[in-house]
Length: 224
Image (cartoon, rainbow, N blue to C red):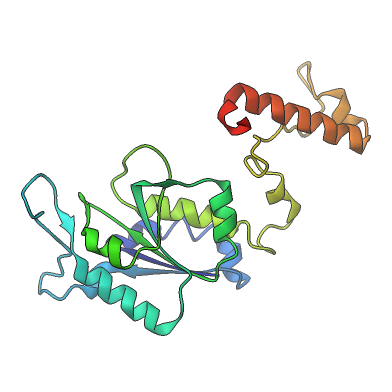
């Protein structure tokens, strides 16, 4: 699976993809993450990629031409399943969306900045708009990293225990049950006896009940 990320600040994305699961996925050849500097596609001598908004108002708007040149170049090299714009007014990222994207082959991610991007980029090129929450960040780089992380970990072979992703929170519209590890007794605080019983069916039943109870308490909207 390949991600092409178009950004005006490529340095912001060096660290998220250079460690842990995302690094291993790339080394295994299961994921390819390529970051493109939008300024490389600017045609003016100052390599600027923004301008004042038509009609006045505060802030600057990212111009259409650099995005168009970069996207068209990439599309000339391979077919893309999605061109995704990370934006606060997009559909909120959730586990079902991550699951859907994990079976795609090639995805372009657009990172906005300033007041936003020229609407014509969204109208002409973007196939899906995604938000990571109801708040505004300085740019689309961190949301892009979040989306890539959420998707790549679902690719078969990325996690050492592939069943782990299937039991994550939100996979069944439930939050995950409490988890424990050694020691079984820490300063009098003990692990529930059922988890030490070795009775797998009863343990799974307990986990399901705990997941339902936790979801009911913390995210009742998921149960609807």
